Length: 431
Ligand SMILES: [Fe+2]
Image 1 (tube, rainbow, N blue to C red):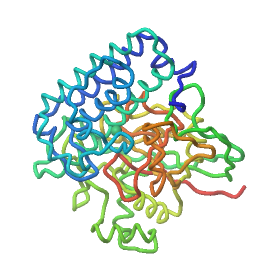
Image 2 (cartoon, rainbow, N blue to C red):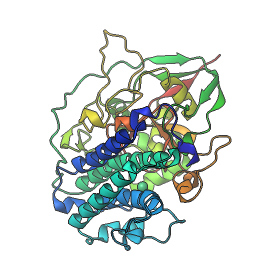
Image 3 (cartoon, helix red, strand yellow):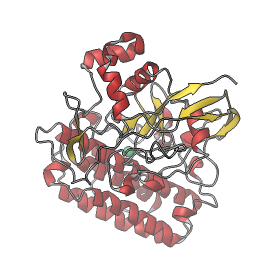
């Protein structure tokens, strides 16, 4: 896996044999920990084609290790169940045929119990692989890829569960949340960035996906970014002023999609616009919280309405590198975007670059100059999706902290909004 060669500083995870084993155990346990609030019925449901059942996530992440590590890496490994290749392959054409994505919710069998046994089987043999003599850097990099893959699915498990629970008239809570205050928004300030010749892409000192490489130069005109994310209160003004019914604010595809879907507000907002669904159940719509669960189309229309635009991913990354990547991530336990700290009296600096919501950029998801996908089936991880999707940056309240970095490129289709997705405004300035 050319693009995931560990270097001197993948140290946070994988310097020594024992720490890789520990990292493996920790990530795998985190997945199970996220399942702790669930009843067995919750593992099976699929609320839409884009969302997968929790049981499928548990099995697929395990299949990834079995397929890409244990089968090629352990000569005496016996697969747990040969039918799982068909059931739990997500999209790897080079591996073979697979169960249709939209029908994952029909898999009442294998049972949850069998999938838990599958995980334990693979975990046992993965530890054997990790503790075996003669591991090399390529194998370590592939294990690290598997762990990052599992972390991606941890976030997806939560967002897919949220979608399923929101579809239930009982609006069940995944788990009780801390009381959410109704704060007053932090003032929005414009931060100036001079632009010029900048470098973006992953640096050599940490794990990255192939799509973050190669690091390369970009030229940026001077620009400004909002000091914080767009809030519910601000987005509510767009809704109340008829934003969803004003075609001049929208891209043509976006307006057509919004009309066809009957969109009049962000996903999970109540019809009376004063409540929203969270992983803690229904709650008040806090005007100070970042707006969340908007599509690219809605983010783009809002930005136009606000007299601004979305940042490009290069603008975002160049700015984010200047600020600490620390925020409301999975470890905070809130599982909901929170209002930017700060008050009117205290002039805030740039905030919320990391966590809360993935930030839509205006950049199409495509290859960096000189990009080469990894060899073999794992080359399908990112490269083949580089059309018709949009880049999002910064991580969300469901992203594990160790999964994130300034160069991280997430990507979704412009009409999708079930992830923790929001926006930060940008604008161009005269040089
Ligand atoms: Fe996957």
